[in-house]
Structures are given as structure tokens and as C-alpha cells.
Length: 135
Image (cartoon, rainbow, N blue to C red; front, top):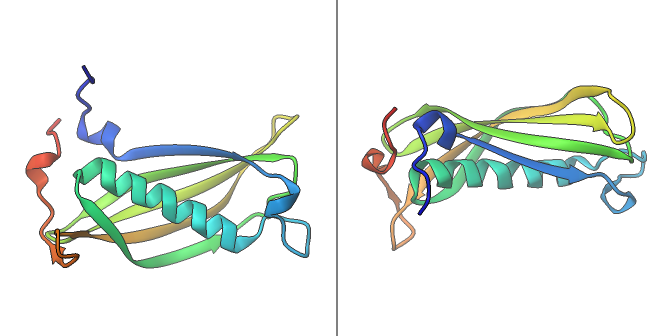
């Protein structure tokens, strides 16, 4: 039997990745496209866990890369639902980089991903907030 989660717990998703040479760009830092892919994946999982419906990315907002990520780092990608509407919801995603063999940690990127619910015909539908457990 699974433990029932409160809304605040359901709106947070965390994922960790080790940064290896196959994820680097020509500048020997984490490739921005790879970062965006991981951010979108965490945002999707966050939205899906929150609504228990089929969700798709509508757009991104305010993507900021604030710190380069070097090889030998571990990143934590954190997604949190920040606003809800009838059909769409927004997920804020933060990426933190930390030294694999040290104690340093900095925010490397952040952005907002907008999602909409899909019905069985892949058309937008209202989000069923009855699926979301109340606190």
C-alpha cells in the first residue's frame, strides 16, 4: 500500500545526475540543451505526479543559465508546481551544481515550464483537481 501524499509533497520532484564527458559542450561545460532536456523531464514528472493526468509541455518561460557546470559535478534538478489554472499549470525547475569531491554548491539554472492536460484524443482538457489530494 502506498502512503498518501499531501499536495505540497506531490509538487516536488528531485533528480540527480553526474556530469561526465559525454554531456559537455565545446567549452568543456555542461551542454545547455542537455540541461533543458533534463529540466523538461523533471517538470513533466512533477506535473504528472501532481495531476495524475497526461500532461504536455506548452512552453517555457524565463530560462536562465546562471552558473557553468563543470565535469566532475553532480547536479540536482528540483521541480515544484508554482501555479495552477483550469487547463494549465506552471512548474518551476531549479538546477543546482555541487562539487563531486568537495562541498561547493551553486544554482546553475532555473526556469518555468507550462503544462496542459491532455485527454485520450490528445486534446487539451481541464485539470481534474479532485485527483490532487488536499492538505
